[in-house]
Length: 423
Image 1 (cartoon, helix red, strand yellow):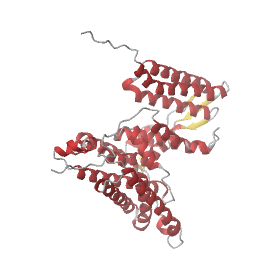
Image 2 (cartoon, rainbow, N blue to C red; image 1 turned 135 degrees about the vertical axis):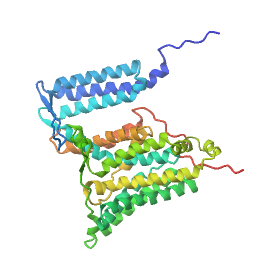
Image 3 (cartoon, one colour; image 1 turned 90 degrees about the horizontal axis):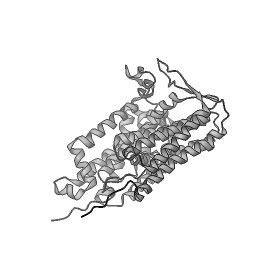
Image 4 (cartoon, one colour; image 1 turned 60 degrees about the vertical axis):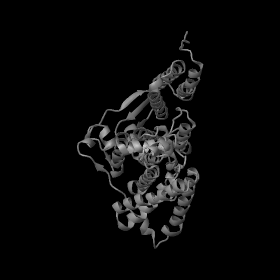
């Protein structure tokens, strides 16, 4: 029997490649039309490579703005054409990263033409801004890998932030951190009971927690903490930066990665630890089995309900820890709605990172860089309004969730209550 030979021309495959390839081509054309055509020949851009605190300074990067923009535009267009015709296949994520970096360089080069911008400082702030997003994503990963959707990360974070401010002001920073972790855990217990025991729709359960915690924290800070007699309970202070011996002295990368407060180092540890637990331990295998096929896991003797309870509660502890960063790792006091939707951005980072800790950390860095970019450019004489720049992290979130970078498949049983069959 003659088999049908496959050819390189596959219409369905081309249809899958066109959206991403078209996006690359659009990025190149946008750089050329919006940036290159508005730059005068001979303009020079300087990238300052000083993140602050470095003992060995790298030389600044100085280049011709127009030539750099033209090269970036051509490379993006060529990458887009290649993606449409042949596709990057297993290197798709790498191609997205390369195009993102090129577009960012082009944007900075255009905005800083005939002047300078401190790229090293922006990267250092990027690490700091990625902390709550990465920790929130780790929280969501623990829950969804076990089959429970947790959109209440935002509410758990804002709860942790308020508790951290009050407990930290009264008893010290470390007590404030511990109290915030416990507060996030208590909120997750409510979510676990509603979604696992009573099998309430997990989106509704998370929404209830978000609405309740955001409203309650706003009421407490407005009616109580702004009272002159209680203002001392909203002045906790924050952890000071710690320079790691040897590592912080690495040229350029040292101050960026290893000259921060304790939260950054906890983030590094938790990303590695959670990766090992999920993919290299028996408990992690059971957790992932519960999230993919709970009935099969149950037949093998795995307690599905216990795994889900433990995962959701530990996820809540992580969310509370992430919330404490806003106070104890940043400004030293609580502000109304200070999480500003980062719990939801964490969910986007989880999806972008394909439900893995390392991937979510990379996505957290992306969103962190967007925040750093918006903050830095808004205080410079940049040819874009500050209000538009501050929208950048949320625009990237919508792009990720809209599937421009491709569709990600989460755990099969996520969001589905488990019904144990009676014998």
